Image (tube, rainbow, N blue to C red; front, side, top):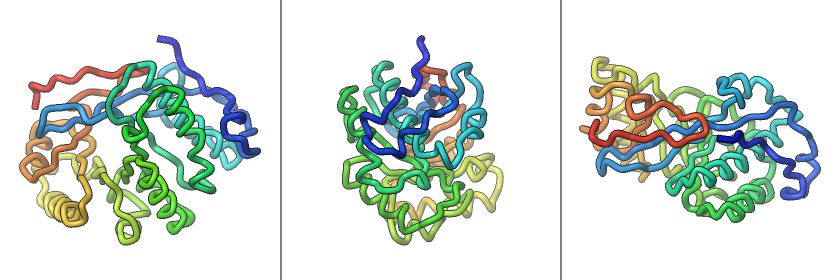
Length: 255
C-alpha cells in the first residue's frame, strides 16, 4: 500500500501558522477498539509511525514549538484520508496536541474539510488527549473539549491516571470516553491495589455518564476482570497489534 504523506495544507487552513514545512514525513498504524459485550468493532485508533514503520517516538521526537501546530493539523488530515482509503466505516480515534490548538473553532477547519472531502462522517471522529501530556492552560483544554463535543466529535481522555490532567479536568468537563492507563490494566486480576483503583474509576465513570475503556489488554484474565465489572470497550495486543497502514482483523470468538 502506498504511504500517505502529509500535504501542504496552508490553502485549507488559511493561516500563517501553517506556513511551516514539516522536516519529516509520517504515516499511521491502526489498532482496533472492540466492544466485548456485543462482540463487535467500536473503531480504530490511528497511531503515528515513520514511513518505514519506525516507532511513534521517531516522529514525536522531531516535533518542536515551531512545527507543533502544523504537525497536529497534518496528523488529523492524514489520518482521515488514510482511514477513508482503507474504507474504515467505524470510529476513527485521533490523538491531538492541546498545546497546539490556539483557537478551537479556527483550528478545526482542516479537520472538517478533510472529513468532507473524504466522505468521513463527523460523528465517527474521536479525539483523544493523552492525560500524561502536561497542559499549559487547563481552562483552554476545557474550551477545546467543549467545542469538539458541540461539533459532534467523540471526546476521550487517554492514559487516565498517568499524568497531569486527572480529576481537575473531570471537574470542569466530562469526556464521552475515559481510557484507563495500561499500567493500571496490567495484571489487574492479580493485584488488589489496582483492583481497588480500577473499581473506583469504573464507579466514577458510571456516575458521571462516561464510558470506560480498558487499554492495554494482553491477557484473557484482564479482559474478564473488566468485563465482569461492566466495562465493554477494550483495546490491546490481546485483540490485535497495530496494523501498519492497514486495519487488522479481529477474532471475535476469542472473547
